[in-house]
Length: 182
Image (cartoon, rainbow, N blue to C red):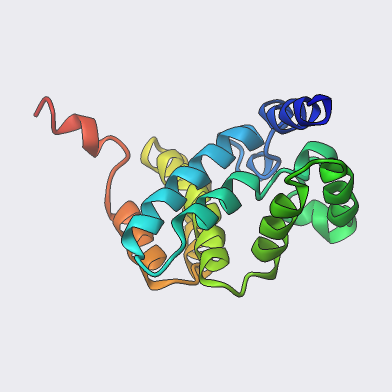
């Protein structure tokens, strides 16, 4: 049980690790754990919209996809050009001695391979979480997210994600509550 307790503390350490890409936007910010929640929630939605997907695998994949960052930190695209994190070693070390470590390792490997329907949807959920943040910043007046939105849209791999992305782009961040009062 001690090994499992250590994994729980390690996973929840993601609440302390900031996502590093926001520095380039000049606005916004979130922890890796906040991002993971957003991606996982979006994965749940995508699973409901894509009936061929194994929803448990998809949601579990999103929940685990950034776990190695508890050890490597969150490297943005510029940093990854110069620094190569050893995510495989981080994964092995994090999962060593866990009775379900192979299951988590398989989910991470599948996510990184990106060939199964679930991994494509999980990667889309990851990008959609970023898209939502960019759209929210744009909606409150920041200009820099506007130039990044097309790049995020281009990364969508599934039709259902492209449709959701377009609906998010076409909506305002406060439409859901503004309608309650107007």
